[in-house]
Image (cartoon, rainbow, N blue to C red; front, top):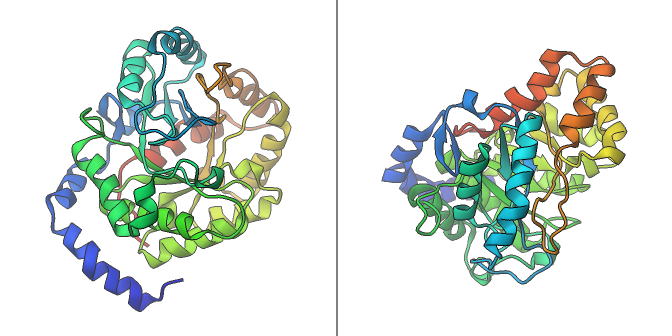
Length: 338
C-alpha cells in the first residue's frame, strides 16, 4: 500500500491539476443532483430506487464496447417488464452493466422514456470474472490515466450520447486485490474525488478485499461514505458488514429473491439492532435481458420482502429509509473527503 507521502505526491501530479480544471468547476455545479440517462433530477425525484440491477447485459459473451443487441427483441421483453416493476412501486433503478460488459446508454434512455422509470447508468470497468471484461488499455495505463477516461465521460457524456454517468461501477475477483483490481479501484477513488460520483464495487463474500478498498479510499483522501460494498449479502459473517457500515460505507444487500428473504431480514435485524439501517441499500441484482434471454426478476422486494419486513416489526419510516432516503443520499453527487 502507498504511504501518505506517496499520496501527497499523487495529489500534486494529478489531483491539483484537475482541481483547477473546468471539470472541477463542472462537478461543483452538479453537486446535489442525481444524474439519470434522461438528465439531472433532484434527490426527491428519485423516489423508490432499486440500487443494483441490470436492464440488460452481455455476461458470458465477449467483451465489446458496442454490444450488438437485437433491439426489437430486447424492447419487446424489457419494456413491459419495466412497466410492471414501475406499477409495483419502482420509481428508479441503477443499471450496473459497465462498458465492455453490455452497457448501451442510448437504449437505456429510450427504455426510461417509455417506461417512466428513472435509470442511472455508470462509468467504470468490471474487473471480476477473471478480468474478462477489462479493456486492454487498462492493463497498460496507470490509475490516473484510467480515471481521466472515466472523468471524460462525466464531463462530456458517454461516447456521442451526451448522457453522463450517475455513479462509478467496478468489480474485483476473490482473494486479495490483484494488481488490476487494485488499479481499477484506485481509479474509481480518484474519479470520485474529482466528480462526487458514488463508487459501487462488486466485492461479495470478500472481507479482505473490502478492507483493502477502505485503505485505498483513505490513501486517496476519500470518505468511506463514497463507497458501496456490492453483493454484501453474500458475506457469510454479518460482523464484517457491520464494521464497514460503522466506518461509513454503504452495505448493499442486493440479492433479494424469494429464497433469500429470510437471510436478508436477519441481516437487516442486525443492522437495526446496531442503529445502522441508514447505511444499507436493497436490490435484487436482477437482469431483464441477460445473455440467453430469460428474465432474472427484480420485483420480490415489492411483492414479498417489504410486506414481510412490516410483519417483522419494521416501521413504515424504516422501510422508507431503506428504499427511498438511503438511495437518495448515496447517489446524490457530492465529493466526500476523508
